[in-house]
Length: 188
Image 1 (cartoon, helix red, strand yellow):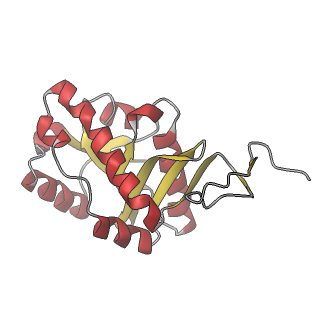
Image 2: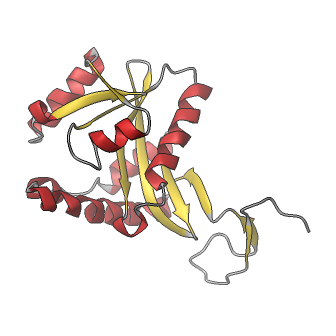
Image 3: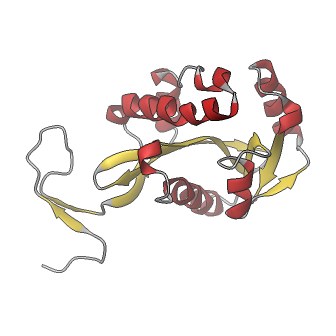
């Protein structure tokens, strides 16, 4: 039987895997399902730890998204996971803001950093946005952190003035304790 490049046969009889006996891509982006939600919460906690290295413990201490929030995004088809070697290593939540697909959250388990999971998730969102006729991608982030604004600039985002919807998001984030003077709106 022929298989596509990068696709492997999974014959794992582990009852926790939905992929037993299927051809699957070990590096895939797929929609999140309810069985992923606790893993996504775990990823969020793990990914937040890097903020402690720059004195932003309050971000690392923020709780992960509640299961109900993840379920809402997933139910609307706006939550994707990056799977690497059969393990969910990252996720992305998206909204539509001012006719753009907005990255509400993208997080990668630190054990998977350097494998481009975040970039693949964002590329997937880009394709999703184009298929819906949306004008581009947006996000809000810290300007100078290497894993935030600096990283997003490397993958094609540019700093922009906030649109009305982005300004509302920045105001909401300020209410959560995120200093708007340190943050930027970006678009690709």
